[in-house]
Each structure stands twice: as C-alpha cells, then as structure tokens.
Image (cartoon, rainbow, N blue to C red):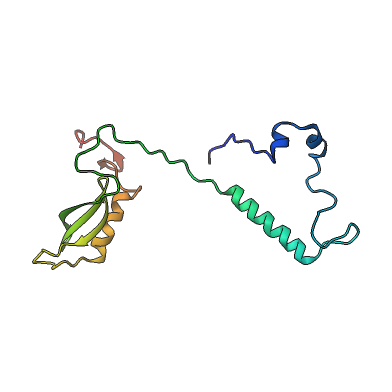
Length: 160
C-alpha cells in the first residue's frame, strides 16, 4: 500500500493550535461524559454505553471510507457518432469454437457494455448463450494479454 501524507485534526482548535485545547489534548476522554439521565456520582447505564459505542463505531467507519479519485478527460475533438449518455448499437457475430450467434452490441462512448441476440438473424432467431452474454466481461479483464508472448516473455509483433 502506498503511504499517504494526509494530516487529520480533531477540530479547528487543533488546527489553529489553541492553547486551551493543547492543555487538555493529552486526555482523550473527559472525566465526566455528559450523558442524559446521569448525575456526577452515578455510573453510566448499559444503554448509554451502547449509544456511545454505536456512535464511535459509526464515526470510525465513516472516517475510514475514502472515495477514489477519478479523473475524467474530455474529448479534444469529439467523434461525430459518439454522444455522451446515448448508446450506439452495432450488429456483429459471436464465434467461440463451434458456438455461433448473431448479436447486437450496445456501446456507450465506444465501450461495449451489453450483448443481445440479433432478432433479424435466421440462424439464431435472436437467441444468445450465457457465454455470449458474458463475453463482454472478458474485454475488461486486467489479466488478459496486452500483446504477443513467446515462451512466456513479451515480444513485439516483428520479433514474433
């Protein structure tokens, strides 16, 4: 995992190095927790303890969640047939060994996202197999080969 150099503060007092805050910073919990229905001398009830624990777990869970940064790069020159949010459909065929079917591929911004059977096909009549439906997932597989290999090592097309 990569190290992050983020610095978190408990509040504005810690950020501005308030002397009153710095004096009590070593005490993580105050001696008296202001819980409803509790007097100075009485201990906390089980219900109050569970309220505090629930809040603590929820706060820790929210603090641990961090959304990844995704950067979108707009087109410099937008292709004529690509409109963001509007799908394009292309007729194609799926062949894997002895299995064949005529398909219609749904794409968004040039990326195939769904495969359906072509209803105009006289061979398959608009039907597809589960392998044809799942074949779109193999396009986004990170383990898939990115180029030619020979003897387990990457080579260029010219070397091959």
